[in-house]
Length: 360
Image 1 (tube, rainbow, N blue to C red):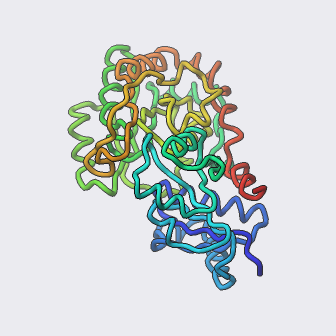
Image 2 (cartoon, rainbow, N blue to C red):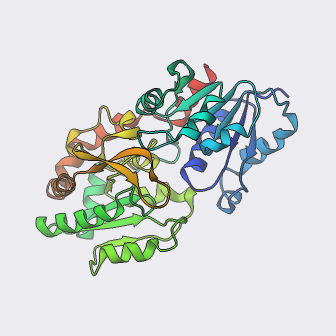
């Protein structure tokens, strides 16, 4: 068998794993012969999932490796020197405006650098990489899972019966995601508007052993903000479909998969409008976008230590005002803006994304 692509990646529940599975599944459905070479042990959540059949097939296809097959690495920058193929392509995934000097060295070993957004391409060019060697390949969502399940009237009836609006946020509890800011802003907006609402945050952080304590400290005695424990990544669509609105305020994203998944599921979503997610927010309703922010040196004491340039801190007052706007105009937003939200991301599927790979 001649392999069309060899994918070097992990398959866990982080962004890298979701990205890799989306690419591999779309390539398989396009009839391409691929081999999957895990760069880390396969996550146990994947073993009992709908991905298993094609994942096993892609793993078996490793016997056809020649070392000269078209190869793609979807992992950290230092992994870009740890695989072979012809050509050698790698995804550059970053959330700030400066690329560490050692990462530049790794990226320069590639035949082609893939980035998910025009913003990402410009950052690489600004950091000295050749624009002719950079190809934009957006990430995406799978419309088999992420789709509008409930009609507008059904959602409005649901929240009126329930007696409150529900908001959903998905992302590690961390500084880059503005997790603490979201909690405080939501509390203030609900208290000032007088509208009954609940916020549910799927925000476990496996890299921070005290994330739950930090969440509890930020929430205080507030009874309308909640968190989920770690759940099955294959059931994220079920979670999205249970809620009315999405809420995000990231300082920087490579692409922002939970944001686009929320929107694709029909949740009018408040989000910041810079970095990678700006790729699919060009036609998005402005009234839901956080557009004010301040550049700040990216330093969270964990992943960012001041050597990765800046990210943008969302304006707290504007975030509060956006939440209040949604709380006070929820039905109008659903009737007049929900379809615009969904339409703005409809072309950003994994199927469309891999066409760029297939077409070269």
